[in-house]
Length: 230
Image 1 (cartoon, rainbow, N blue to C red):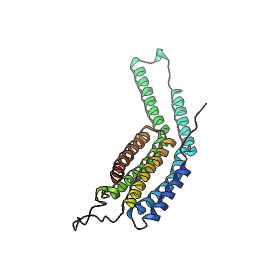
Image 2 (image 1 turned 90 degrees about the vertical axis):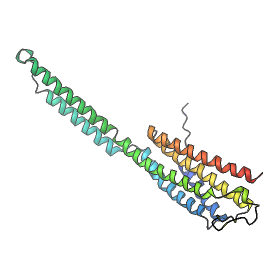
Image 3 (image 1 turned 120 degrees about the vertical axis):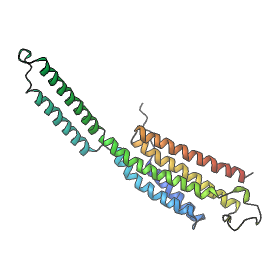
Image 4 (image 1 turned 135 degrees about the horizontal axis):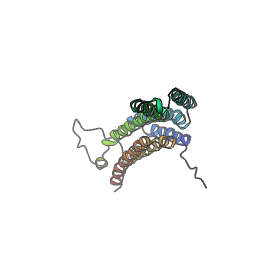
């Protein structure tokens, strides 16, 4: 029985929008809310991109097959003008004709490879551009949680003029860090949608790299949550 289990882009988008609302409820003026809102916008733009990547491009495929057919037809037509009478052809002429035929076949093969891979390369470029946006958002989220030190929650006024503002309570800091882990996990899920629609080696490797990045960030944030609750 074939397994058709796949990630649902609509459900992921709804989860991202819900996360942005939850962050807005507790931290309406925070930078994390702005990042989550930006992430939601990127996810909304990703949906039509993913749909476009997952569908066959009829125009490109028709044009590709038409050009290939014309090229093969032209090669066959040109071969019809060659005289293969061995009695009236010298060895030099046969070598030149054979070399010309092989050159045409090689050039035609290269052109066919270029045309056949054109659709995949266009989709790959579009996917990599969106995946790079997701990678940047993951790093921005990491920057926002960078100064959230769980060991400073119950410490008195020991800050310096250049110290970051630490006005969050223990509960608020825990929620803040938890929202960061949810956001990084959702970034990995959105990136997986691209690999799901286009199982290209480059796209899959890029998606795996983003997932590894998000997993590492989540583990680092959860270490802070563990310290906070000790």
